[in-house]
Amino acid sequence: PRLTNQIEKVFDLMKDATWRTLAEISYNTDAPEASVSAQLRHLRKDRFGGHTVEKRYDGGGLYSYALLAAGPLLSGER
Image (cartoon, rainbow, N blue to C red; front, side):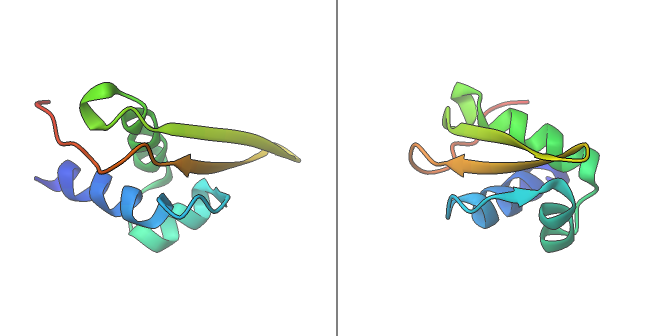
Protein backbone atom coordinates (compact mmCIF):
# COMPACT_ATOMS: atom_id res chain seq x y z
CA PRO A 1 0.00 0.00 0.00
CA ARG A 2 2.81 2.45 0.82
CA LEU A 3 4.46 1.91 -2.57
CA THR A 4 1.16 2.07 -4.42
CA ASN A 5 0.44 5.41 -2.78
CA GLN A 6 3.95 6.56 -3.69
CA ILE A 7 3.64 5.74 -7.40
CA GLU A 8 0.22 7.42 -7.48
CA LYS A 9 1.71 10.59 -5.97
CA VAL A 10 4.56 10.59 -8.49
CA PHE A 11 2.15 9.97 -11.39
CA ASP A 12 -0.29 12.65 -10.26
CA LEU A 13 2.50 15.22 -9.99
CA MET A 14 4.27 14.30 -13.22
CA LYS A 15 1.32 13.75 -15.56
CA ASP A 16 1.42 17.43 -16.58
CA ALA A 17 4.66 16.72 -18.56
CA THR A 18 6.60 19.44 -16.69
CA TRP A 19 10.34 18.89 -16.37
CA ARG A 20 11.38 18.32 -12.74
CA THR A 21 14.49 17.12 -10.92
CA LEU A 22 14.39 14.18 -8.53
CA ALA A 23 14.74 16.67 -5.67
CA GLU A 24 11.67 18.62 -6.86
CA ILE A 25 9.62 15.45 -7.27
CA SER A 26 10.78 14.22 -3.88
CA TYR A 27 9.85 17.50 -2.20
CA ASN A 28 6.38 17.56 -3.76
CA THR A 29 5.56 13.89 -3.09
CA ASP A 30 7.29 13.49 0.29
CA ALA A 31 9.13 10.42 -1.05
CA PRO A 32 12.90 9.86 -0.95
CA GLU A 33 14.77 10.62 -4.19
CA ALA A 34 15.81 6.96 -4.60
CA SER A 35 12.16 5.91 -4.36
CA VAL A 36 11.12 8.58 -6.85
CA SER A 37 13.72 7.28 -9.30
CA ALA A 38 12.39 3.73 -8.87
CA GLN A 39 8.79 4.87 -9.35
CA LEU A 40 9.71 6.69 -12.57
CA ARG A 41 11.22 3.41 -13.84
CA HIS A 42 8.04 1.54 -12.85
CA LEU A 43 5.90 4.01 -14.81
CA ARG A 44 7.63 2.79 -17.98
CA LYS A 45 6.41 -0.79 -17.39
CA ASP A 46 3.29 -2.04 -19.17
CA ARG A 47 1.58 -3.01 -15.92
CA PHE A 48 1.78 0.63 -14.79
CA GLY A 49 0.59 2.07 -18.10
CA GLY A 50 3.72 1.93 -20.27
CA HIS A 51 4.25 5.68 -20.01
CA THR A 52 7.18 7.53 -21.54
CA VAL A 53 9.55 9.06 -19.01
CA GLU A 54 11.97 11.44 -20.67
CA LYS A 55 15.28 12.37 -19.11
CA ARG A 56 17.50 15.34 -19.91
CA TYR A 57 20.89 16.38 -18.63
CA ASP A 58 20.82 19.86 -17.13
CA GLY A 59 24.55 20.07 -16.40
CA GLY A 60 26.59 19.72 -13.25
CA GLY A 61 25.43 16.14 -12.75
CA LEU A 62 21.77 17.19 -12.55
CA TYR A 63 19.01 15.51 -14.55
CA SER A 64 15.37 16.43 -15.05
CA TYR A 65 12.47 14.15 -15.89
CA ALA A 66 9.17 14.61 -17.70
CA LEU A 67 6.32 12.10 -17.92
CA LEU A 68 4.39 11.74 -21.16
CA ALA A 69 1.38 9.89 -19.84
CA ALA A 70 -0.02 7.25 -22.21
CA GLY A 71 -3.27 7.19 -20.26
CA PRO A 72 -4.24 6.47 -16.67
CA LEU A 73 -2.03 4.79 -14.11
CA LEU A 74 -2.65 1.07 -14.17
CA SER A 75 -1.97 -0.85 -10.99
CA GLY A 76 -0.39 -4.26 -11.35
CA GLU A 77 0.70 -7.02 -9.07
CA ARG A 78 4.05 -6.53 -7.41
